[in-house]
Length: 115
Image (cartoon, rainbow, N blue to C red; front, side, top):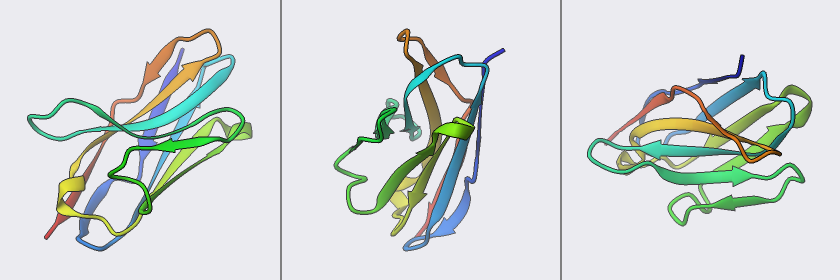
């Protein structure tokens, strides 16, 4: 059974930091892992991703403030978020893509940034 379990969300003041974690299990071979977010009334959007080889990519809104990393041995991906802004408020979802091209999603963790 495939499971992606996110943790680390919460309430933080503007300028603060949070670290999200996502542990994947039940996926035989993982290629890319990433973080997406969805704010109320908006579509889900990419925040950051990391490939199996370690190369990373970021949305423009995340560049310079967020850092994605992964522990391949533990099938875990992290998102360090610094200098948070109220517009970063959203539900953050973890996605894992297998080497066969299958996408798996977590249930999300809420990040709320107060002004």
